[in-house]
Image (cartoon, rainbow, N blue to C red):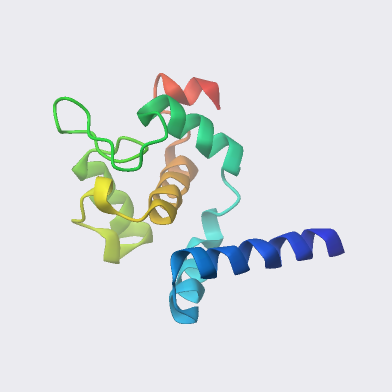
Length: 124
């Protein structure tokens, strides 16, 4: 348990330093993502992201419809944001910070499982 706490503390420290987030922003993230944080592991997110966008958080498919690391369309993005993270609604998924894209993916997965990702979801 102590090792787990040390790893968590180190990860939070790295997040703070690397993201230049304020403590209030980090608390907001931790509080709002708590209900779905354990839905997918970091490795599962990576595999899904690698399959969907070759691990590119700014990816836009050729049609321009599917955007971001997990290839959300705007309607799905807005629907999930409305239920979980209203401040992300109407933002372009390809321009949203990576940690919020991960959080949105966990939230959608918690509701619908792999169904929104019919091909890449099979790898999870």
